[in-house]
Length: 185
Image (cartoon, rainbow, N blue to C red):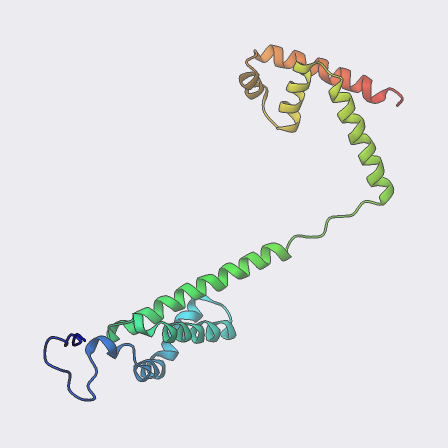
C-alpha cells in the first residue's frame, strides 16, 4: 500500500480559520445582516415602491448569499455581493410587475354577437373568393398595397413595375372586386 501524500507547508494552528474561508462563515453573514440590513433595505426602497417588496428582496438576497457563501471568498466583498444581489432582485421584481401590468392592462375586446361574427366570416370568405378571381398582378398589387400596407413606390419596387402600372393594376383590381362583391352569391 502506498502512503497518502502529505500536505506541504506548516500545518494550520488548531481552531484557526484561513482567510479564504472567513467570508464563508455563517457568523460573518449574521454580522453583516445585523450591521447592513437597514442600508440594504434603503437601497431596495430606492428601486422599488413598497416596503413589503423591499423586505422580500433583501431577505432573498441574504438567502442567496447564504447558499452561495462558499463562493464569497473575501469577507470584505460580502456586502458588495449583497448589494449587487439586491439590485438584481429589484430589477427582476420590476420586470415581473411590468409584465403583469402589460398582461392585465389589455381591455377585453368588444365581442360581436354570433350573428355579426357569422356575417363577418361570410364577407371575409366572399372577399377571398373575389381576390382569387382577380388577375395575378391585380391581386399582388392589392395585397401588397392594402394588406401589407405598402406605399405605391414600395409595391412598384417589390414587383418590379412602374408606379403608373401599380396604380393601373390597383384601380382595375378594386373595380373588379367591387363588381364581384356586389354580385349575388
